[in-house]
Length: 217
Image (cartoon, rainbow, N blue to C red; front, side, top):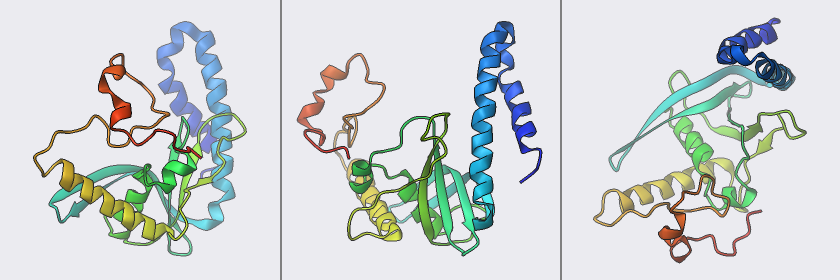
């Protein structure tokens, strides 16, 4: 990692915040917040330098499934570790999924990325097993840049859970895209769902959702 990494990040931030030049006080507040967060980020990365062989940021992948269906996506980060495994990291500005959502396969993103990586679906990364799925919260509070590992239900290791998530996704694709049936608004609406619309009450969500009385832990 470059010794002047913080200066490089700050230069990028100055360009990004240039639209606030007319309100310099607000720009300066955001620059101070950014610089503090950037320092925390670099400390996090430097503390794990000895574990990481190569980092891949914002890397795209495409996975041909036998349905037929092409699953494509972009991972925040996939790190090739010195032990030959992969660590997949999702940086969050909001809250990561709850442990209960992870265990119930209601937070499939990282598991599907692990399944894709295991099949060599990401460019420039050889097929390999994933040893860790990790959420990192970006911010300034006590939880910022603290690794939160993906929670697995009893009886699953990480790659088993990735395969199970892939199979569930393929069943959903087959059921809801390749069969003549109406689409529901959301497969698994969450009790913590953000951005509820003005007409949410018309969806009669409680009649078809799975969220009633479930533990979010």
